[in-house]
Length: 437
Image (cartoon, rainbow, N blue to C red; front, side, top):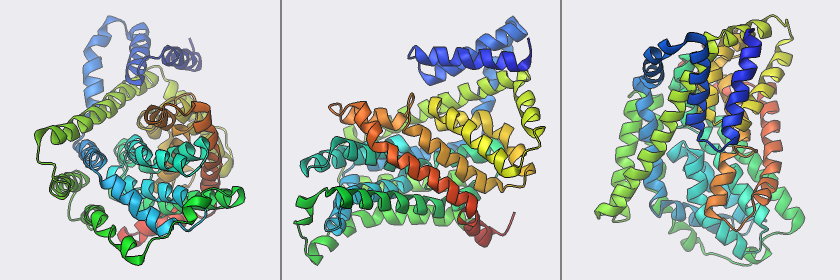
């Protein structure tokens, strides 16, 4: 059987398993095991454990559970509520101010967590009921937070960028720097669209009648200042070369726990154990998906599928921008069916040499890849953020969440186009701070 036929069968088997509702990690692993068994035979048992363990046995991966712990600590405390309230008081007079508050809160919260599901859950629990109370349609309330939550994998510290850095052996610190301005740009574009849409449709007229004094606006800021300082401090020690990503993540997690426990007086065992339990569950889920994706990538390589696809793409002799368009479409399709970390583990090592040989900056490509993964978080059939919102607001139909998030997908496409026109948005900061690659 040719490598392409084997690849189609393997991917088809994966989709069938996903269609049965099997967890993603198990579907990836089972499809890979079946393919390897047919190729290698019973001897596969000697490479399974070693391959999966090797996929996650990297010291830099220690930063992932640490950043997840940061997010769990903040999400389990009233910090998200304080952040949301502070932004609402400053933006309530603006048309659609509550939507802008949601998106802004998602952006800042992303800087504490690096996780899209955690961002959606933390902001959605407060934002959706408040928006419903002020008369926003369910689609606007849920869709804006589902889209805003995608910023969690772009704005540093981003788990997705950490995985990309390890998979392609590129600098994680430089990747984080590359994500700063695109993250700010995409947040601003989300807000501009929300402002235009809400102004055009006249949403939140009641909210604009509520006024807050300057004292009321300022009194909320000290509640969120410690968390902003933790974000700034974590990124400073990382960008300044004071600490490695793992050390910076560990310090950030420790400081976040201290602030949460002291500021919100969580001195009992139960709330602290809930923080660690939540972080452990999400970390294990991420690591299982990564290990299974590594095994799936090994199966693709063993069947010569990766090499065949890479050779076929390289042999097309396409214009570099046409090649990038093909790669973007490929990534969009992958992101619709698999979580970001799985897509990166399986595709980044294959695409990285193709992209660099075509003359594209690898750090710029990381940001473009990440925005493609953001699109996958709010599009069916996987659409992780859609299901997170549906879980915290079960009365809102999934189709309403999807309909509300759809305009933000178009905004993300526009962001990718802008990054293609002006790649310096992603590359300027790391080049200025660390020198050109």
